[in-house]
Image 1 (cartoon, rainbow, N blue to C red):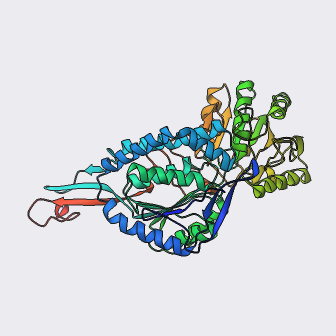
Image 2 (cartoon, helix red, strand yellow):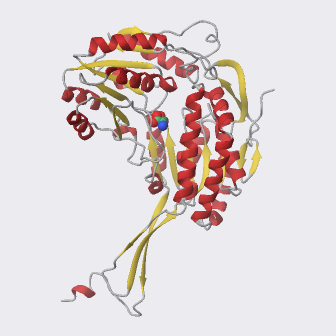
Length: 497
Ligand code: UN1
């Protein structure tokens, strides 16, 4: 019998009001059911929002340093359970154990950062233009935060949002991706165990159409933080606009790595292998395009294809595996669809392009690591996010051309350049339009204490991570204290004549 999971509403574990459920399966071994989860609907969201609203009135009064203590306890529990969390995560979404351990570690880092922030949450004191008057601006919580997260970073991304939201004094209604509900549940168990009071964090499992839409549209949800596709992000922004709620969107990417002719090619090779095929290419930050200087184009391609052919596909729990499966059948089909489009539009398939067969592969949603060369900037595989193990290689004759190609996308999340030339590196830092630029490092590898997010249609201007996410989850309250005992008039008294 598969393990049965529940929603967590107002401090109690409960089934969906409808009693309906859905299964979550291992993408590497499709016959293995990881768990059975509540298929929730509007009613469940209603109950969760009500609980969060009520709990807000007490949680907002808990001193921030005390909330920080709870965050540190959360971090300690995650450290103690790191290995179990990582294994469960690999079982439910497929990426290799080294990466799921990294995913949990990103959550741990975020917890301890939030712990410290409890004693900061700095505001400002500013001189008043009038005598005997004191001006300050304080951070105050917003209210109920709706948190809607994807399956590719089942622990890290929820923690990026939930920990700062809580630390600022908000309460949370959390809808995790239906492909990774077990990791999300484990996170909520930890929060409850660490001392987060009933109603402060609520989890409602189910589909985006039902549960996600209900959260985003709910008038009592004050802000929404979403990571996922650009298409869904736009719908969320439209829906949220009706109640004028604040929305943070982390959406698609079409990230590129440039390799200049003066680069250390073996370093650039390790970078692109990790950036393009880590997490089976299923990262918003994945390297989806490789822009090679024409002078090293042939040589680098030969080095690349040789290594890509040697990548070992398999169950992410096995130490021999380099690349795990796609998260589900739909994602595998999307990848296969883009490979067909690449061929139709005239790109050259150098390796991959198949659903691999063989022992350990037949029962999962695997796709062979794929490299296309001869890709033109107007090809769809150079423009659209694929979210799978497919790398499109383009050629450039100069730094300026490489940067123009890199920028020729509706997205702007991550970017990378390999060069030994410091001028080229700084020109790239200045001219590349992306939220994140790596010099001599791959497009993936964001650290929890740095701002994370993108420009153009990757987002709507907010940043997660580091100190910047605290701006999203708090409001500024401006306070004027007049201790003159009389009426003082700004703009007027000082300029009476
Ligand atoms: C994502 O792809 O959605 O930099 C997040 C990275 C990770 C986070 C990725 N630390 O690739």
